[in-house]
Image 1 (cartoon, helix red, strand yellow):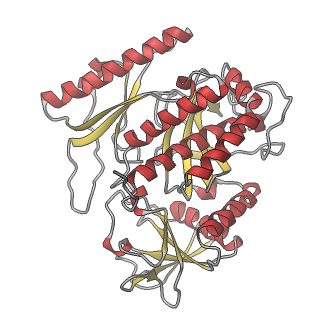
Image 2: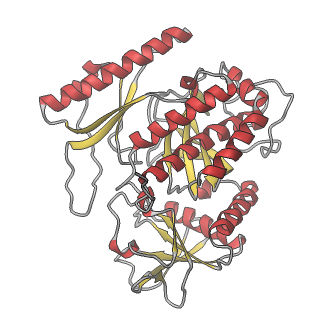
Image 3: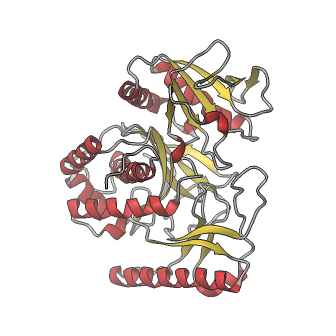
Length: 431
């Protein structure tokens, strides 16, 4: 069982869980056919919110960190998935270069890089870590709080290849979401596999495009198992580029907020939900918690503090002009030790490999939990979570609940594959 998690295994979401379990053969066949037509992201993580009456993804990361929060029991799944992913791309691959972010939080992020190195080493690869941070000029050995050793080496760029000293990889794994822009050193690498591709980064990605793809996926999935897609889909409005420093910009945002709140109230009334709806206002091209504001009414907009708009490139100052989306707020009904909690599901290739709970004692059920001072609690079950426990009543089985989370995570992953296909600069366009 999940220790001290109050609502993870209870609540009205049981009806959806039962429908998912009853439909498992059809669901797995449906996913199998989808992956025959579409290529999953190399790896991904999905933040999921369980409101008790609704279960939905609220963010999908295509350059996930936090791999160090997975338990050792989950590593075999990650290693097997890594083997399958590499074999699909380059069966003869032997050298892998991990390119991390230029993060200042040191050990906490590098522990994630060390875990990725461990996974791919056990998958049969020689792994080195190549930094594109200009401050890393020589090989630098770092000792992490858990005792792991990480060596960061400056990357070496030739005309068409990237590597480090005495190491020429055929595959480069990016663990950098490129929020500050695509560095030239990563472009035009035609002789090596760059995973994920550059257009998976935030200079190209838009949350609105992803959730538009997810809406399409959720409708098809809802029809497959006979449920209202809204139960698994957070509605949204795309605002586009809005200058919040002008009256016109504020009116445009208020109009989007009001329209979405009206839709949510209609669904709450349909299902007899006695909660007050709210929306999240997010920067359309960022995976960070920056700029996220929760509002219940358009009147709340005037009381909001200034939005922190992520920097989009080197030297770019913060601005009130940005692309925004307004997304249906999904509260979390899950608690751990009195703190609000949300599950995060990790995937590699088309496989669910593990997850954990993100918790935050200082935030409420409507707040984003993606914050620097969040804590992470591994999914620690007393029984195997690898397979659902068929015949067990809904809400009584931790593996069944985790299977349902994994289904939602895979739906978001499938939506990401649609998204990447639509934005692939090398895709053929037929007229």
